[in-house]
Length: 76
Image 1: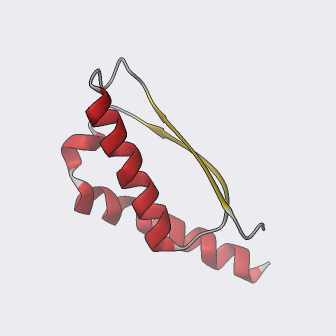
Image 2: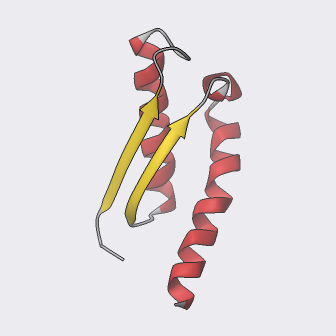
Image 3: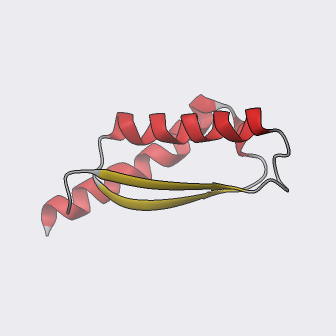
């Protein structure tokens, strides 16, 4: 795996019409990946309802999956 994080975040304008909301979602996703300290390339597609969850709820949903990716990559 590469040492660098390459993160692509897709937030549809149809789901979140305000740029402020789309940018906030992107910041949240970047922060979640930064806290999980994963490396590699990821594409994250955000659907309607993500912003309404709140950061803590989103973190608690995404973070265990990222941790399992780290454990799986270490075992290979």
